[in-house]
Length: 357
Image (cartoon, rainbow, N blue to C red; front, side, top):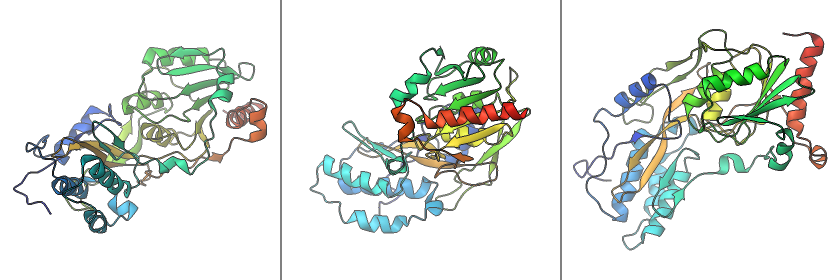
């Protein structure tokens, strides 16, 4: 192991959950990083030094060891034997990337100038449940506002919103226009399939249009020490009800395994509201707030540092099951129909026929 006097490599606030409420994020950064943002100031390409630095950064700051039951000491023994002084940077990158893959975490990456190590198995063994060509049939006469496309289905009885990313914001005025356009609709579909995430500020802006009052929608914890179980008490995350137009009629949120990161958090918040039904496939998860650090050779490592919990205090890292499971059917696809959208439309029209609010 590296001696403490050689150097400390500490994490820096990361990207995929960028835009989270400034107050909460400030608390996390202040408590997680008591010494401030530090970077390696001694450059070296030595394979062993970089291996030990990466292993220790993850050992002291990764947040899901106990949840995922990963024996990180055993990982050190396994991959330490693969590190050799004679290996080139590409061979070292592959070993370090494979080591991070033991975490099975889509928020954990090793980033160099020539490659990015990533873990994709969190969605690869699931059905796609989304087809771009078929989906385009529902957006032929759509409107666009910021990062969303929207239109009306079923003889204008159902509003439909597709949000393919939370990296692109839709403004408050844009959301007002969407709700105005849907004012005569009995229900709304929000489709976040294949939305890999983005900024929590964008997903929260949309989610805030659906509660009647401020709602504790989850919790966050931060590391308080280097031990794998050293965490603070859960800190409540309050979703404040929007001061603008809200929607209290029935809503169906469509999900698939590619609904990840900030989108997983959006689904987690939306399921807190009584008028919302989640439909489709299990989400992809990704409920760890990611942070960045740097190795002595300049490579960056991104990893989950603070777990986000749901309103019941449960971890949603592995995804959220829908209220109603629906898969795309081949017979519908041949007719140019999206089974999940069609099921959501029928669900909302049945609400109308029953006269439900």
